[in-house]
Length: 355
Picture 1 (cartoon, helix red, strand yellow):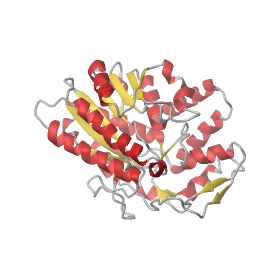
Picture 2 (spheres, one colour):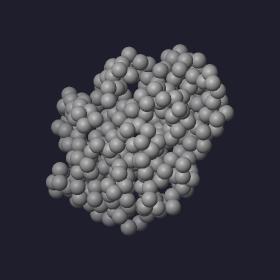
Picture 3 (cartoon, one colour):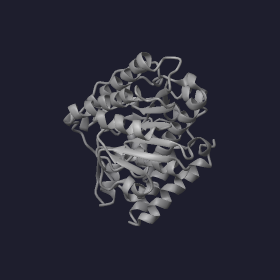
Picture 4 (cartoon, rainbow, N blue to C red):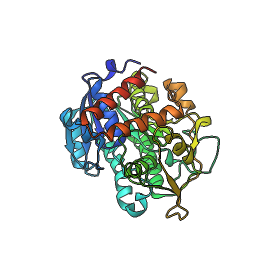
């Protein structure tokens, strides 16, 4: 799939570009020649994949809170993007309990602000909005959630993402459904993403890496919980491919797509730990019996729609997914930014060879 022809020299806004997925997406876009404008309110973690890669020197970047409608309107009007990837979010389930209002404002109203700004957009623009697999009403089913299943979300994070999906659908039906419409919008819902460069708190791999590099024992909350684990590059490629497909097939406007591993390849938290041990020796963990907040134990996504309409499919085995992730962090432990940049670019090149 030749993405260069689609994105080279095109104007692309990435919100949340300083985050984990946002930095990988931004790196891939710069590697294929896109003119990227990043929009984020801050650097969300220390260390930061974005800073380690030196992306601030390779793209234009604006320090803007996604909640600031006036500034978001100004950016879209002045930059006149060909593509927008909206990733800016409060993305941690646990944090949504302690920062509930901020989670709702960022995840719901941040999305509304993008949509509201597009009402004044006169240029043909493809917008890919990233929500979450947590947007579905969880009924602990093994069948895997499809895009037309009931939205829900019991925790504040999942509920805010579900609400964002409702807002997207409302705006499309109300404002972006005319014959002369210039805005083509889709949403995506991805499973649990792992990969190098994630330093967020209360996520499995980052928490483990922080402990293992200090030769400490990691506390594990829910070892038997099943998640649709996938490498960050699987998802980033899905975002880019979706943007390409809707550019050529406007009938996809208003659709949502799941990006997740094949359901037979969903694994438990304990499986991720055991597989990690193959690539990082002498790691240890212990089970934390006390639960401070509720989490779903079973979460599966059905990726049939992405397979059918986008010709997207998972390309990495579970073992390869974990290996690429652990390899990146082992490279990071050498504390050489040049090696980290090369490792990240090399992993993108390796993945592209599979496409």
